[in-house]
Length: 114
Image (cartoon, rainbow, N blue to C red; front, side, top):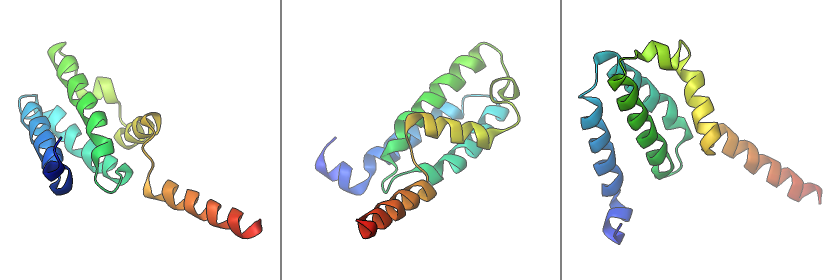
């Protein structure tokens, strides 16, 4: 990645457009689940959102595999898409804004108590 892409975020836009074009080839229920997943994972993004690109890439790959096997989104995700996103982000180490604020508060309190 070159400096210009890193500063402007062109690399992220290019990746997201690639993901979206792949998702558009999948059935409608997968497309609806993708929208919900991207909205739920947005709270776990860092300042640039680059930490979510590998996670979203894995989701797209997984969706393509399960769609090719003939499975529905309901079979693979279940009813709790938000819970799936929290578990996915937690497993990958992506912190929500609340987690970041909590860590910052704990560090500040620890610094004041020392």
